[in-house]
Amino acid sequence: MTTKSMKLYWKKNLQYLAILLSIWFLASFGMGILFVDQLNVYKMGGFKLGFWFAQQGSIYVFVILIFVYVYLMNRLDKSFEVEEI
Image 1 (cartoon, helix red, strand yellow):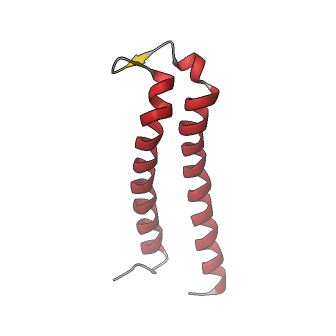
Image 2 (cartoon, helix red, strand yellow):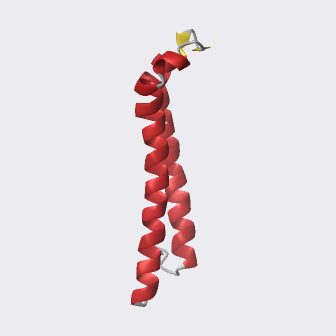
């Protein structure tokens, strides 16, 4: 891998991280703390939606984001031909 392609690879990796961490921040801190009053108008499984996001929803979002990150990184590795054997 050349230095230019390594920098491009790392830049793309950081873009993925920034986007996925922003989604996680919105799901955990945003929906569990900042927007809790607006979300508590709705119910999910008998619980107010803001409470549900604070207790369960952010964990589900985090696990989903792990799988999305693995998928994106595998695709990025293939495009830069640095995939694991």
